[in-house]
Each structure stands twice: as structure tokens, then as C-alpha cells.
Image 1 (cartoon, rainbow, N blue to C red):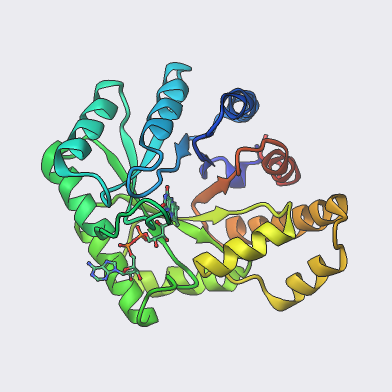
Image 2: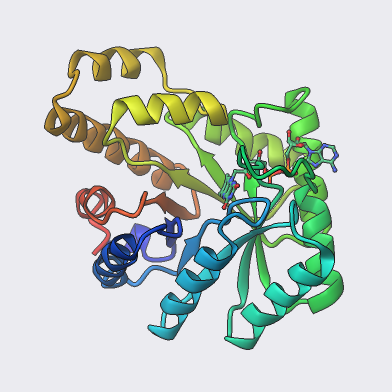
Length: 280
Ligand code: FAD
């Protein structure tokens, strides 16, 4: 790893697999990615508790492999007892980092309860003191439900005031949005590290659908370019890898404290970026 990058933090995100085959596949992916010595892996959580067991099992397996892992957690469909039990379980197996979120209630769960992330941060601090390093979400392109840029920053600050230690961003493909957001956060007195979330580009249709839902913008020129490849997945990957590598270079050179990769449970797209960035 070159010296400019050696003080940066790198982490890899997974989602809990739903099938036995998925569990095995993820094990292989994790083994490959663990060779890169990330600061931690993280495992998403279906708000409303839809992946409670899947997240717990995946986190436990990664921890038992001797690796650092952070469960994502949201309050939504869980009652206080269930949430406390889960947090106590994580603590008992040596987990010391949680990604605390409001989450989005998955359709079909029947639950509509959403508890804002600042309240979850407060809750974890109240019950476990400073045991956990708490990560929260941040949105350089602004959360889709936010009333305004200022209101989003205001609520981001509430999460930090409640005791969050650092933040990971929603993915984006416009580094200027991130740098502007960093400056704005500093102007609001937010001084925690804000790690860019990096989504490799491998499948345009899925990416476009997901981006529309979560409010991440794919700049028009990138959409147009990706559309020209149609079903040619190799060309989409090649273009995506080159584009995202360039963006990561810009982010790291411009002061990003590290990168958090949304691996989508695949090793190759993240490893291609890792290699291009010369992070070994
Ligand atoms: P909040 O911080 O609560 O913000 C949600 C919205 O409400 C924002 O518009 C905010 O401005 C506003 N707001 C915040 N606090 C208040 C308040 N006190 N009063 C009024 N308004 C407020 N989703 C999952 O379901 N599972 C996951 O594992 C998961 N992992 C993620 C990891 C990262 C790094 C990121 C960036 C997102 C992740 N998400 C996940 C998606 C996330 O849950 C959604 O974006 C969700 O809509 C918002 O979650 P939040 O924690 O940012 O919510």
C-alpha cells in the first residue's frame, strides 16, 4: 500500500444471505476479502427485524473467523427487550462496533414504525455506555425524505450529538457532492470522519432501480454511457471499474479518510477497484 493510503480506513459491507448456497458463497467472498485486512466487515439489517437471524448468524460467523465485524442495526420493528437482547448478544461475542440506522421498513412486514437513528444512538449509549464505536449514515446528495439540505445536516448533527463516532455515506458518483458535504458538515460543527460509501458498477438495470429508490444520483452522462452497453456485462464492468477507480482516487487524494465498499456479496468488483487503487 502506498504511503498516501496507509493511514486510511477501508471496510467491506455484506448483506445476510437468504439460502444455504448464499451462505457458502459469502464465506468464499469473505475469505478473499479478508486477505486485504479491512478495518472491519459490516452486515446489513432489514429494518423491522426481517433479517434479524440472518444478520446475527452472518456477524457471528465472521467474528468466529477472528475478524472485526459491525452489525447494522435499526429499532423499527423490534421492541425494546428484543433490541436490548440483540445488543447484549453482540457485546457478549466481542462486537465493538455497530452501524446505527433508522432503516427503511421492507414491504410486506406489516410494520410502519420508524425510529430515527439519533434515538437509536442515544439508546445504545444509554444502555452500553462507550462500549461500541457507533457509525451512522450520511447523505452527500441528501436523504430522499429530507425537507432541505440544511435540515438533513441538522439531523445528521443530532446523530453525532447523540454519540455517533463516525459516518459512512450513501453511495454517489459525483465526488464534488461529497467534498461540498464535508465542508458543509464542518461548517455545522460536525467533526467526525465521514467515509464515502463506494458502490461498484456491475449491473446497470439493478443500479438504476436501486439508485432511484435511495436517492443516489447517477449522472446523466454515466447513465447514457451505461445504456449503450445494453446486456454487455463485461463492458459495463470495465467502464464501471475505470470510472469508480478514478472517483476513489479523487476522494482519497481530496481528503476522504478511507472508503467503505458496498460489495453486494461479490469479491471481484471490489477487488478490481482495490488492485487498480494500489491498496495492497
Ligand atoms: P435517519 O438518520 O433517522 O434519517 C432519516 C430521515 O429523517 C432523513 O431525511 C433525516 O433528515 C430525517 N431525520 C433524521 N432524524 C430526525 C428526527 N429526529 N426527526 C425528524 N426527522 C429526522 N437500510 C436498512 O434497512 N438496513 C441497513 O442495514 C442499511 N444500511 C445502511 C448503511 C449505510 C452506510 C447507509 C448510508 C444506508 C443504509 N441503509 C440501510 C439505508 C437507510 O436505512 C435509509 O437511507 C433510511 O431511509 C434512513 O436511515 P438513517 O439511519 O439515515 O435515518
